[in-house]
Length: 432
Image (cartoon, rainbow, N blue to C red; front, side, top):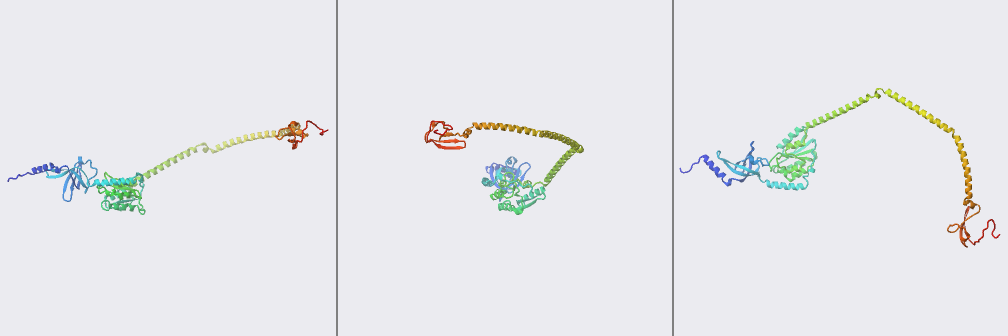
């Protein structure tokens, strides 16, 4: 028998050398769907990669997976970079992962970024658009899968925090075909006034990048932004948040967190009310004690202890003031009466003085009248004035046809000069 016989160890060693030394099996990219994912306590991640016809074990060691930005989930389609290694003792091989990424994520992310830029330019993501959530909602609406963990978590958390709360569910498909239309329809339905909803929670539990894509689609994002009611985005995610978070009035990382944000804790509110009531009661009691102390302090004053004594003292003071006022009035009346008694003498003296003054005034007036030009005119004299109003003092100032005015004691006579003579006669007729 000339053929070489290998031991198991030799064969496995040869296979290891052949595989790990072959560039066809080192630093290569492979693609497949994840299954059997295990996060080990050591920090390593173990999983299987499969396609339609085969399965390959893989390990993503802790030192290599530190940069991973998402959680590996069952069913994810991955592009994985690494090398094949052979375990001699077991005679098995697996893929050692150096890095990985979601298959097709690049194009999806590019589309999301373009949509985000477009909607941002329209102002849909403006923080000023966000409304405050109602402080104490009576009824909340939820848009999510009726069979998923999200609705169970929301109900559990919401009713634990406020047992009397009413919850209305709008069942929706949250991923895959028909998800976008279903989510939009649910939001629009809960916005109808007949439901009397105070706030809407819309979302789902965590999932892969592709699973959450419905919440990155334009119709869903616009439905969030156009909601008449305040709306909370309740999409579970670890790192990258969906666009629905930007369009919502409030974004929560999980459905449970959304319920905590939207619903107050009833017991805490009751405690707060009790505390405030106690504070008000304490304040009122304190103010009442203060008022009572003031009343008691006032009641010890002398006016309250012996009011008759105060009144008597005031009456004595009033009587004294009255006596003084009466005495003063009597003095004033006596002085006035004395002045009245001498008034006739004063009047007679004043009348004599007035008569004397009148006599002296008459004499002075007669003298003034005698010396007055009017008195002269009254004795038969006149004042001649030319046309310019100047007094004519001599015959030489006149000529034939000169117009003059003669001012007499009782009026004025306008005259025309016929002739002039240089002779003066007083008391004689002309020519005599």
